[in-house]
Image (cartoon, rainbow, N blue to C red):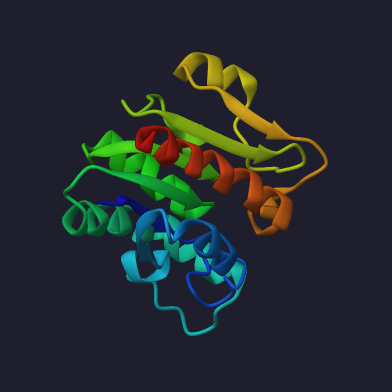
Length: 179
C-alpha cells in the first residue's frame, strides 16, 4: 500500500504550475498523491488574476478559508508537500490539528509570523535570496531548522535540481520503510 502524499500548490494553483508535473513524475509510483489547488481551497476568485490581487485575496481571508477547507477534506494522517502559500496553509492546518506524518514546505511565505511549530517532522526549504524566508532568530524561537539553498530566490521549487533533491528526500522516506 502506497503512502499518501498531499500536495498543496503555490498561490497560482494549477494555472501556472507546469513545474509540478516534474514532482508527480518522480513521486507517483511510490506515493498515492492527492493534489489541492490553493486558490480552490481558499475560494479565491479575483476578476483580474494579477499577483497583487491573488496575494491580497489570500491575506483577506483566503488563507484562513483554505486552512478550514483543508481540515475538512483531509482527516487521515499523510505526508505533505507544499509550495509557497500552500506551505503556509499546511503549516497553519497542522497547528490546528491536521494529522501529518511529515511536512515538506518549500518557500512557505507567512510561517515567519507563527509563534509555534506543528508536532510533525518538518523540512522547511528556502532560497537564500527569498525575501519571504523566516529569520534565523525566528527559527530558533520556534524550534525549527531552515534548509537554505544558496543562490536561489522564492521560486526555487520550480527548478529541476531542487525538484530532484526534494523528491529524493521524499522517496527516501518511503523506500526506507519498504526495506
